[in-house]
Length: 156
Image (cartoon, rainbow, N blue to C red; front, side):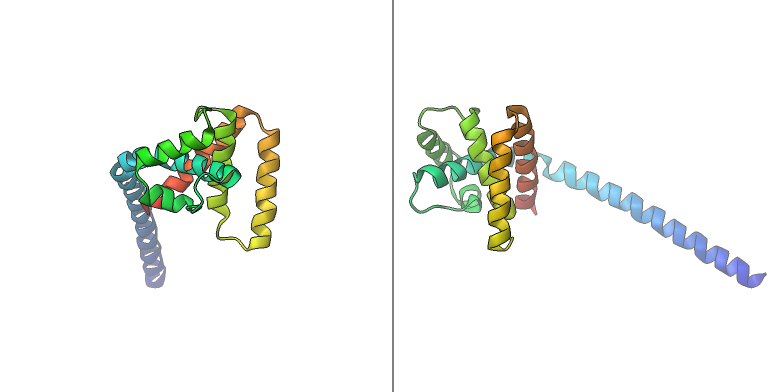
């Protein structure tokens, strides 16, 4: 009987610990969202423009130095980045199909950069095929999701 009470007590302590840990995790997630929300919202358009310029630059070679998306986000000023994108788009608007497609190429290039080269080439080919087949609304959703994930990685 004494042994059963000890097991029961240990079990209750373990459940209590798990519940407290879950509550702490929820509080921590809430704190993170509140703390970084403004930074994240300010970073989203920069990351989106950087992705668009990166994809455009790959296709049109406007900047021969071929900066990475990370360099564009972390080292280049917002105004300079916007001007480079405008120059690369040659009069098209940033909300055009062309700019969106370039953005998807840039964002997925960044997402796939850690893969082995062969795998990355296969995935990039699949991305280009998907871009050709998806509606603008679906491409926009995909781009928004990709940029959001990417921006979060810059906050870490």
